[in-house]
Image (tube, rainbow, N blue to C red; front, side):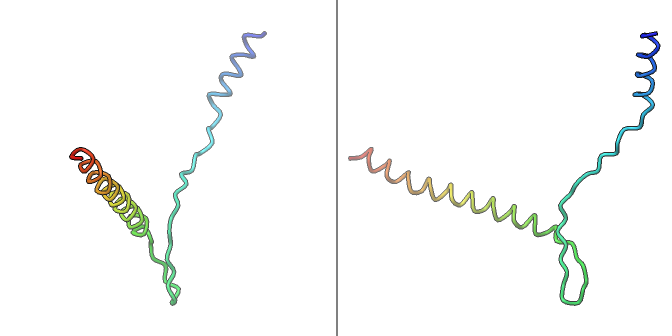
Length: 76
């Protein structure tokens, strides 16, 4: 009896449909004064690009600031 119930549970679990997983995507929509809707996907790319540029510039300025101090210490 226990084997039958276990088999039934396994069969029900196999037949049971799995819930559909929806993909969540954050979309940016731009609505102008006239009510027209445009995609704002380029804004995501622009933010990432500016973030990378600012991080790279910060690291560059950090190294430029430290390297001359180290060179001066070596020669003194």
